[in-house]
Image (cartoon, rainbow over all chains, first blue to last red; front, side, top):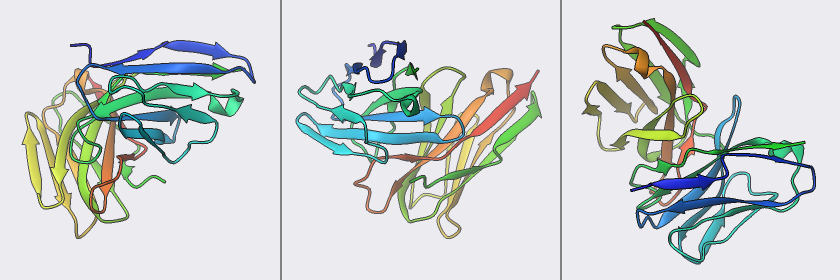
Length: 113
Length: 112
């Protein structure tokens, strides 16, 4: 049972480049979400999904796109990377977004230069 | 916006001592959760306490919730060096149909 798998673990981008952070879970969780973690800021919600075909914005959605075509996968797309998007990104999943604990991936450390 | 605020921001104790971390929040909640994050790793769910509960235990962890004061505490008894990590509280606001909102965390160092 792999849990939540994030790839890549590390990435360096140049300003203006685009890329997709991958997230997959094998627990049949309906709810998936993306957070970013910056020093001194805790975790901030970027986007979330309550099921296949349904997504919604979190606190800091600008510059990011998501889609949820399957229950298992929830990729996060950076459209045109900016230095302000340098951060550690975590994907999380749960049976439901309110009443259950979340399972987190190990994170993607992204640097935009 | 962030709901929970942990106190203290950093805590250093000797192995075998108890560690207490506090979390205050601003609005009514459905439940409150505590997570642990080891350096360079993802977060791990520790415990969930619902708004109608006052105390929960899990092994060496004890969580209390005081909804009248909008606060929670996490007690780790008989701390070990392996407990060194950051600890986050997270809340589900209002009726419960909202995602988790995390605080900024408490960094605990347990010295052997």
